[in-house]
Length: 53
Image 1: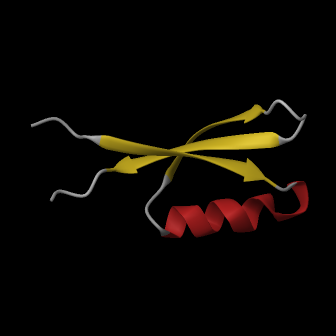
Image 2 (image 1 turned 180 degrees about the vertical axis):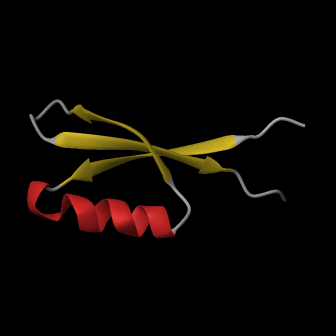
């Protein structure tokens, strides 16, 4: 069985980037990439394995 993933996009606040990513990381999310969003802010894309139900 292959891994099923769930994804999240998270806006990053420049002065709190580390705290935001640390929080999501502690919840099991892995950072995939960070891109510039449409409003010139940064957006993080994260993934984690879907829970088996």
